[in-house]
Length: 175
Image (cartoon, rainbow, N blue to C red):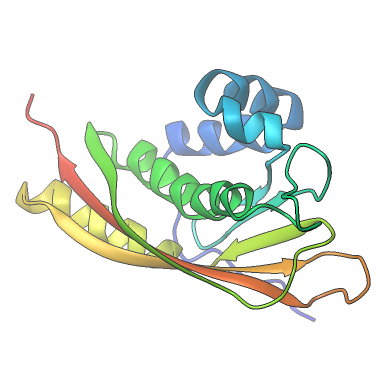
């Protein structure tokens, strides 16, 4: 099987950022500083490319609800990171100050998450296009990113547990 080729070549700064967050020890320190609740819940960044981001959250005492499944807020943290990390990478690649803000969220939950769940967002091209447009026009751009959560292991590996759609807004900051 042929490996997928990236559709975008990142700047040196964006490549450095991608390498930093891809190292578990550096991501751990960054998330402790910037996302302490997610760090406590055990959210991890599994992989980040310009096209796709994969995050995960464990099922355990730090992330469970009284109904013996992963709490929806812990799932939302992992889901948001799978979309937001793509935005951070695109902003780093843009080379200019850009503000990034969530303006809406929708979620649906299909099955109980009773094992580590992974969240995959494959909308990287959407993020980069919106940030390129914001950089070029100076106008705010709004876009939706979708991510799907599935159980990594447990009683039924690959079972979809939730879907999230985040509406993001980006705008180039004035200098």
